[in-house]
View (cartoon, rainbow, N blue to C red):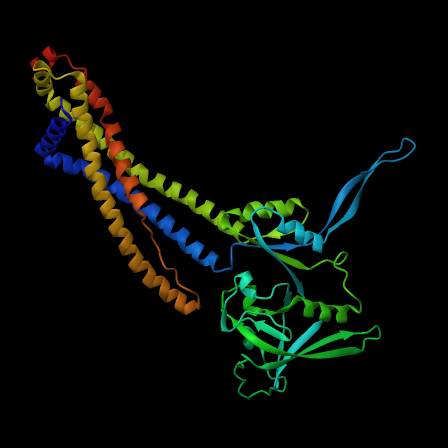
Length: 442
């Protein structure tokens, strides 16, 4: 039997029993729609989580810190005495050689040393004061760290600072009296500010030193450390810290407080992080959170898809029952087909094609219903979540249910395959019927 003839025969047989086919296909529609909706919700949750996580900063950056820890070693006793364990302090500081070692790791694009201010300090602007969190970075432009300026520039020059967008919120009037209207956050762009550093001598006397700095840029908000930080050149930070410590800093011994390793590709971040950790340093990257979250949501997609597949299993039983009844009703027809030359293979393909056709029709309806339900969920959920975000001051998600093309194709193919499997046993029964017995069947 030619393929085109087989296809026409299958369509005619399905068309003869429209009501039964439609009722059977409804179960497949429900099961397929359940798979599409549940997996779409899981994918939408994953995308929303990733949007929030991608807001935590550049995922190609790895924060490296010195490793200060203890390692137990076994001490052997002399003269036959027993051994014991002793804790030995291990220190792995970030030296200039460490920076070279990090840069030599395959996939590393750049290495940026950083130091934090080791003295107490504050910023003064006119009558206002603010606490500070200053970071010295060994780079000429903060753009190398993925930071963007909303005003001014990200370039670090001598005597200048680049501040986070929340720094102006820290300023207050030290002479504020109850009942007074608090001063608004100052506009610091391009302004000269005073940096007042403080330390105490052995007798407890306070020692102050003042520097004049110019605000060269204000960064865009990205809800990370940079929002509340003040950045300056590393060599100037080194001068401040040496004044606070009362001695020169020896990088071979004291090292750097932190280093930022930038990977050329996000896909290699975890590999580079593991390499740095194996070298004895503490390494952290936000990419590890993203990988963990993605793994969780992939498992959720599988679970949700399995729950929806249960409905398809019930529909498969319906298809098998429909095909079994069809064989009983068409036993003489099967005998007649075999009597005029149809082979077992032809009969098998006819009934398998009808079962797969029911799965395909139900799959089409389920795919469309699932996609439409996903769009409705998106509209309703996003309106509700936008209202919740406005009340709580957060950012609303951009998607609640996401239905990619691959999911629709997979659901349609899976529904067709379920129909095919459901009709396998009834089709084998039909194909193995003896023609004479089938023709005598009443």
